[in-house]
Image (cartoon, rainbow, N blue to C red; front, top):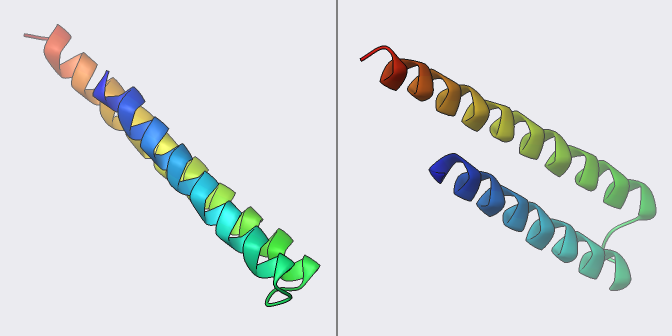
Length: 67
């Protein structure tokens, strides 16, 4: 359960970051290419940490099952 909560938090952070990038683009502080690069980078980080959470949850489940 806490793994799911952590993933939801990560997705919320991703959404907030993307919203801020879009606001910068709208204010002409960011080019379209920079926006796409930033969104890609944020998505890669989201994927990385989501996988780490999945791995930790799986390891914990295996630990609990072995008791």
